[in-house]
Amino acid sequence: MDRQVLGILAPQLHDELGWSELEYGHIVSAFQLAYAIGLFFSGWFVDRVGSRLGLSLAVFLWSLASLAHGFARNATQFAAARFGLGLAEAANFPASVKSVSEWFPERERPLAIGIFNSGANLGAVLTPLIVPWIAISFGWQVAFYALGSLGLIWVLLARYLFIAPDNSSSGEKPFARPAGLLHLREVLHLPVTWRFALAKFLTDPVWWFYLYWTPKYLGNTFGLKLSGLGLPLVIIYLAADIGSIGGGWCAGYLARRGFSEARSRISVMFLCAILPLTVIFLAGTRDLFWAVVILSVATAAHQGWSANLFANASSLVAKDKVASVIGVGGMAGALGGIVLAEVAGHVLEYTGSYMPLFAVCSLAYLVAWLVIRRERGGL
Image (cartoon, rainbow, N blue to C red; front, side, top):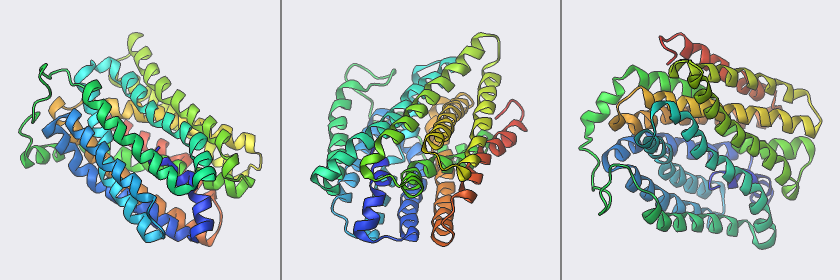
């Protein structure tokens, strides 16, 4: 929700604060740059202190950054707030995937990751339902204040609800292991780290594009105002939820049917790479119904892809290195997001056409799958 709120409010903020397409691209890139920097180090940090402490500290800091958005009044201040948000949010997926690797056997990880990842999509569903009402009723600043406050409440609840399987009854150990810089160097020498990073670099930017530009695309193409964005976005991100859980379940189903764990994951990822090819048809449609259908298929495919990609990486490295590998791969994905955000800003500023961007989004997964498939065993 903290990420999605900017995309929901972008049309209003454009009008009220006078942003250009280039400035919006820079604001998105500020988050991506901080996210990339944070991911490189947050995985190592989570491996060192444990998933519970690492994630709780991250949520506390990114909630403060979310609150700071409400005080911003120009593009530079928004970019600074986004930078802080990205830096702190970077620990989210390394800590979450590490938790799954601690709790679940290999065969169950795609589904477990799909379920926790569906929380992000649930947030994307709730945001267009809640944020427009808050912004219209109380002002856009209050939307940022409200979501930042929710994160602080989560931190309090997590102290009592979030544990790790190797914790003693007296609480989490201060350090999970002495994961020093040598640990990070070892991670960077693992082939799986760079194969995972390449896949993330190619496909993560597409999700970021959907997250930040879908509301703008729907508004510009179909004339939807802030109050009219809710239902289309709810449908699109509910589909993403289905794809996240369904993609994880399908991999487990194939494994139970005799496929190896690696083959089941790569097979589901192939399907998830084919489905986004439909995105290219968005450039020619002027029917809101079909635009929502195509975007729903695309976001569902991304989340199914993501659940299996995370599970694959977590299954190929030791548990004490999982968060670090996820962090390095996430950094590569964020760097790709910076490139696409800047390209999107320039393309839309000077051409006004989404066609080149949809072409990139439609082909990215298939290219990533072909690169991955050339490796022995899939990844």
